[in-house]
Length: 270
Image 1 (tube, one colour):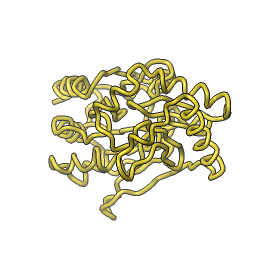
Image 2 (image 1 turned 90 degrees about the vertical axis):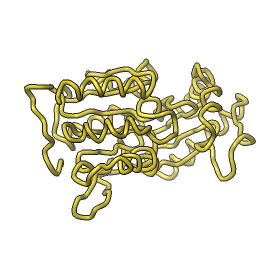
Image 3 (image 1 turned 180 degrees about the horizontal axis):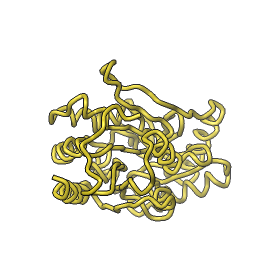
């Protein structure tokens, strides 16, 4: 439930919720959101429920978004209008004003045996195709990460520089090949390409449609009241299920596109 109503005038704009992919939508992949985006989001929190939804784990939401909002002066009351849908929305975190901290509202983890099977087939498939590049990892990093409700393959790890990640698979052909081989070996799971080097693997149906459906339930809103921003909206992209749901979507190429759109929205309502 939403703790406090935002200052929203339905006569000005029909949307109550702004939902966002993260990488390439709010930031440069795997980096904190820039100050301009942080300031725009803080302003939006006075008028909308703000809902980032991504394949990333909860801790990354804190590093990439929440910490940056705090740097530009977000208040605790505003944070009650920020809803973090991690691992494609299979985990939901909201801010508890009384505890002054984040609480987990729900989580749908994979079975341990499924995590083991997915991990094995990802590594096996990447090795067979020559795309297992553990020698390029930075110290302490890993290619495959258990995010509880999904397993994520990141070809160069999480800590690698942005330019190296962009260069690794700009046309998604490497990841498409890995996904095709994984599906041959382990077909009963959902495979999605996201970010710059990532493949997210989850139980069937555990994609952004699942997350957005729960968003509708948790925030008690209709699809028509949501505006979604994402960069992977093409068929097969991890934002595409949102379009299939019939939710109004703005396709962006970068956080600059998102900033431009948010400035326009705020200009209308303020």
